[in-house]
Length: 242
Image 1 (cartoon, rainbow, N blue to C red):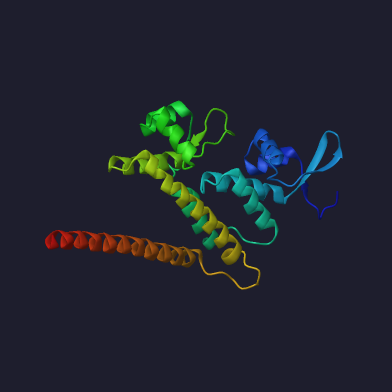
Image 2: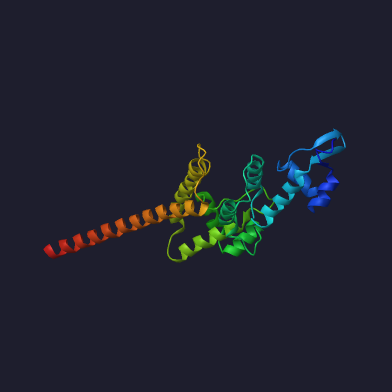
């Protein structure tokens, strides 16, 4: 070990990062941190940058509410020379993961508490899961739903209260699939494009996407009401001719 390498023991990581040994071991198991250099079975040394990585993980969890799978990708990009602290990236994180949090905490719910909070029945929930709009995760013990599922369920209940049938919500399963395809398109064609040209600011990308979707939605409604109005006028005309 030379002076230039500046390696740390586990005790140093705990002291400098303020994160427990158990949590650091969890980050290591999940592949979030670079593996240590082992000099013996019971002795391991970590690069000094590991302290910054641990602090960064906690920041992304507690302030940006990012799931660990996303944090892993963010850390990978950071190590490849990208700067995930840039304002552009933070805007994207906040939009995707922060806006539906309840008092800044990503709550987890088991099925009983989720049903109680949403007012859904067992049958309603089963239908929404079968349709593919609610997607429970089996990875967090008995807590299979999060705050985002709660927000989606609340929005869907609002539609049902206006007269939409539960089976009609299959429409939004198709919409969700289109949104997934759009996310892949934006990632591959705009943000991580093949050439070296810098992509537009996230705000502008989002605004342009929303403009297209808004225009297409208006187009669909205009066409429907024009056709519907023409059909009514034709029926009235037929009545007058009889």
